[in-house]
Amino acid sequence: MFSGGTRTGTSLTVAVLALTLSSCGTPTDSEDDDGAAVFSGVVAAPAQQNDLGDFAAPAQMTPPGTAPKEETGPAHSVPVPGLGPETASQIPAETSQVLVASGSDASSDSGQLSFYTFDDGDWKKRKTFDIHNGKKGWLADRREGDKTSPIGVFTLSDAGGYKKDPGTQLPYSQDDRLPSSATVAYGSEYERVFDYIIAIDYNRVPGTPPTDRTRPLGWDKGGGIWLHLDHDSGTNGCVTLKEKDLTWILETIDPDAHPRIAMGPESQLQK
Image (tube, rainbow, N blue to C red; front, side):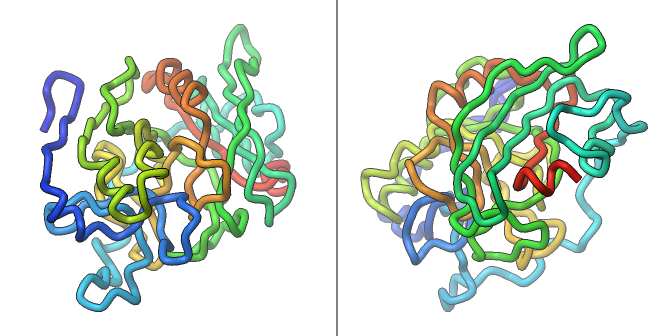
């Protein structure tokens, strides 16, 4: 529920948390999805659920095209550094903050993320961070459980995590079930990866907590793609950063700047 500008979660028992499935970005063979999800009232860390019997996810959560779409105007008059005409055309004129997450090639599971702001008629690079992305690299037409990060340009609308709101202007959903979910699924070494989250609006409904499971494009496209805390290895689709870097982004990102993230291998982003 909301309290002012903050959404807060409620606690569940460890017995109930034993139903959780798996977590975005953790290096285990059993985990095949990304981000966290709510399953029958339980915060279930994201998982490939096709082989889990009674826990199998529906093929289609909601019909395609039902998610609200942000109205955008013409393309930005100035391209973001590193983005070619095709990618830059997806950055709308009203956007003045862009994150560019890229790897050296399509199979890379690590790279860099740069944060740009538009000021005095030009894009200025504020900071660059080291990141990890999908274990199998980048893919535009990704599928549930393929361990790739999606290629494209996406909005950034909602944040959350186990820890209290660090002062972000994004709607923030605090949920004290997230570390227990990660611990039950993978062990205590992963309990901190969801301390802070920014949801990437790939196959999700903007304006909902990052843990919302609605997938407008269907279950097979995967979902729950987040910016979250790094664990020094490739992920199952999310993009991960060190805590101080993600905290800086949370404190700096501004919904009024209509922020976007452009993601993919350098060669694709330069098209």
